[in-house]
Image (cartoon, rainbow, N blue to C red; front, side):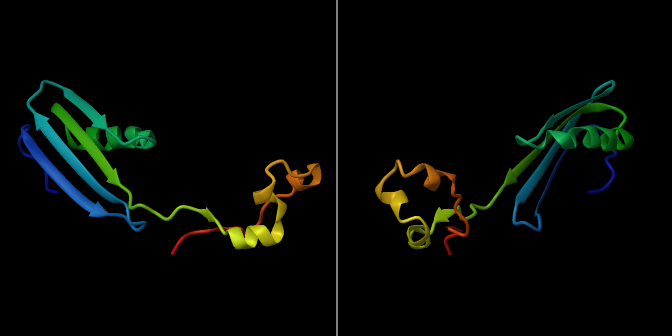
Length: 116
């Protein structure tokens, strides 16, 4: 993205991160006396705001600027129980929900898998 010479403008930049997350930045600006920055970030990305405000303040001095970040994560496989392995290790768990006190203290290991 180049240097902005006018206070009225629109920019859109998109790409993909190493983990497969797609992102889109949209910036809109209109004339204004001072710098008024409005950020719209996805849930959980609030920690980016201070750094974004600082970087924007270094590049822009005036204008009403709206910046929107959109993230789209690919659907990743969810964990499922490998019932065969579970039943070999804890055969009483699927048939009787109560189980014994000793059985409830045991924790499953290596019974989770991601579907292919």
